[in-house]
Amino acid sequence: MVTLRRAARLGALSLAFGLTGGWIGYLLLPERAPQAASLPRVRVRGRPVDVSADPHETALAIARQYLREHVTITADAHSLERTREGLGARRRRSSRT
Image 1 (spheres, rainbow, N blue to C red):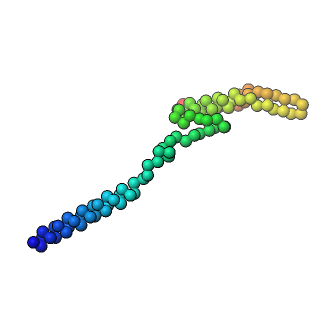
Image 2: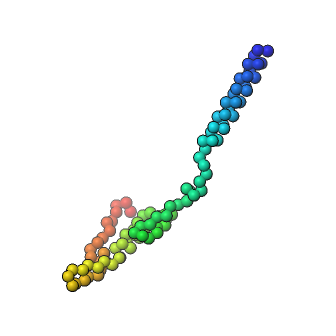
């Protein structure tokens, strides 16, 4: 009879610890946050960038666009308007391509 009581007490204690551990584990689960899972909005030089696109191609497009922008250089009464590429700006050829 003593061993049956002891086994029942041990079983009840194990069940209590198991339920308590499961309850604590459930409480420690992270909250669902669908807003945090959305992609961030990225802007380069004031223009939106598609984050889901290929990063290398996106960087090349931004560099090409930067080189095509017009710049005005003014000295005294003279003014010169050229693209950055026309003024000698170049993008470096990366060895990673």
